[in-house]
Length: 500
Image 1 (cartoon, helix red, strand yellow):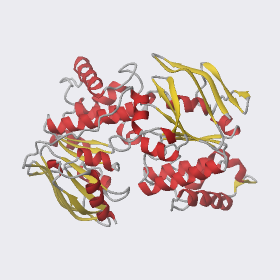
Image 2 (cartoon, helix red, strand yellow):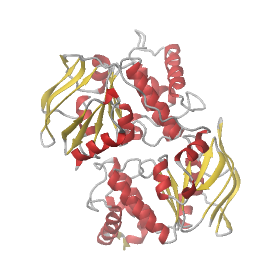
Image 3 (spheres, rainbow, N blue to C red):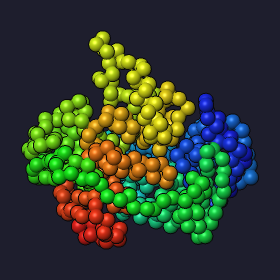
């Protein structure tokens, strides 16, 4: 048994954990839940030796242990799959999988690459990832990198495995496969600590759930006896609203139009339009072309043929700077860590970076008073939990980082927003806030939004029209959603037909 007694952890300006006691048993899948900033990530970092508690003790099989670093945790048969992608881009898939025990593959002064690749292949097969062990990881997708992290944890043969938002980047198929793996770990007597914001996923997979709120332990329960609203109430102190958001004031004018977009070997004559005041959904499996098309629209990827029109006029977009300054287009990336934020910078600078050119004096100096006003407004609007605007954004919880990533584009006051996976890795409270914010941007401010999401309920709830992607093509369109006459089951079934 892994037992935590009276664990407390204090960071400057915030008490991340306050007298938390929990235990995790072999052969049990134990969910750890709570809002962003509740203390979940801090707790698992303490379990894995990344942080040390300021107060409290950790016991393994009745014996007190002190873990000074992650290597100590691994030596105690504890391993973790981090929410953040933590792989070495220049290393091969195999090297990343066996990294924690690479010394076992030494052959004299060299490495036994054959044995390493064979070992990696076994765990790649277990997680259902079809890539070569000797392939470099740099060009792989976020979902593929996440599966490599899971393969790495499995290869360690740990007795305690912590999974921090393991399905946030995975498709439905990959998630189903992961659940099979976790259930097998349970049969093998492994204790699995499963951190997730996806309540249905927790209720389907886990035996027990424990909830933290504001760094304190709220309670635990048997997943067989709990419902969604029970867990929500433990997490946020109230039940969530499931009411429809209503209809949008969509105008007939086109805010953005793509005409015969072609990139050789990928897209062939892709066309679509986005009306003013509309939320247009992009749905499809990972790799279907949704994000890739968005990056072509904003100039991050090359377009070989075709045209992009903004407000009826042909646009020449070669960079994000062109998007903001000339066409008032913003892009919230799905990969906030690598593309959306500068983690070593503070919260304020990450928010204001999109408006620096507007608040500079003739001498190219940023007006601190204007910057402070914009940053404070966005922190308030996005409900970002941070000790200070000068706090390092990399120290915030995943959900608060996502709010900053969205907030910087709201600060730029873009007319067109492309929002890619807006609620990946955020809790139910933050998700509702982000949904409400996106809706108000379209409803009250007349923004035109392309919403890319793998979360079908989210897409159906917010989008008034949905384009379905498969194999770099638009294979279907779901219209008439603004009239609110169709049920979720009807819409999801129609989407499923296009993907079959």
